[in-house]
Amino acid sequence: MFGSPKLNLKEVLTGLQDTLQPEIMVGCSSAGEFAGAQLAEGAISALAIYSDEIEFQVCVGTGIKRDVQSAATALTSCLGQDVYRFRHRYILLLTDALAGYTEEFLGKINELTAGAFQIFGGGAGDDAQFQSTYVFAGTEILQDAAVGLAILTDKPLGIGVRHGWKPIEPGMRATETDGFELVSLNAEPAYDVFLRHAQSREQTLDRDNPMPFFLHNVLGISTTAGYKIRVPLGFTEGGGVICATEIPLGATVNFMQTDGGSAVEAASLATQTALSQIEGENPAGVIFFDCVATRLRLGSGFGAELQAVRDKIDPAAFVGCNSYGQVARVDGQFSGFHNCTAVVCVIPS
Image (cartoon, rainbow, N blue to C red; front, side, top):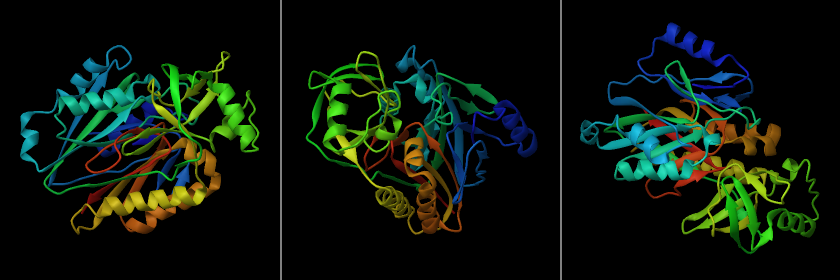
């Protein structure tokens, strides 16, 4: 279940538990909810899964800010040795993205499980307020935590990952970072670099209200597999820029550009990739994550992205949310913690 924090989430979870009596219930707070091609805000979306061919286990890790290793160990400790009797193993991972360290946390889970699981999911949201985000395990609401739903099956799920951003200027070195703050690029205050970029593109950058500029000028971290997208959120008094996700010290960083058509194409390609992995089965259900920044940038045009997914998988059930970061560590694709990226999971019939 994905739910807006504008709602009384404890009442929502308790109501779902009492009414549906699910054996397992997981979810997170969100920043836009959708079912099919219908987008809502201040709502909930939920998908019920019943199968005699899939086994599910729920795992929780807390205290990510205090000790990433311990949190990852706690989350993976519920996975018994019997999981390896299944041909395919997945973890739907939902994190309190505002706790930070999600990329490191994801890497620790991968190490502790010896890469035996493909991992997908997203960071909890709070309707673009960036104040408090939550994950759910049953009716329990947690912060500074992550919830993992292990999905164990002999039939493969399909997972697709795409974004439509491209670099537009030469790369720069992240020469100073501090948590979520990118302090300098090429030893120059980040704000000065952003201002010069805005002037070169003949765009307006309002230091007190930079989000309209940021939504169209995200950053990309160059990797051997492509660019990991990072969304800037605001400037510090010292000239640094706060990002939705940490940027590693020494990383090569580019300004990126895209358009609405690229986002729709990325979602369509991610869905097509996911469908190609389910070995000719029909899709029964789809879980879709995309960034709140994508929805804010596209406005009403975000509906076209949802429709692109819907067109590929109709009439399968389709739910998802706008998240603060998207998780994907999957075979043969771009892996890690992302922003502004479409992540699609297809569950076969």
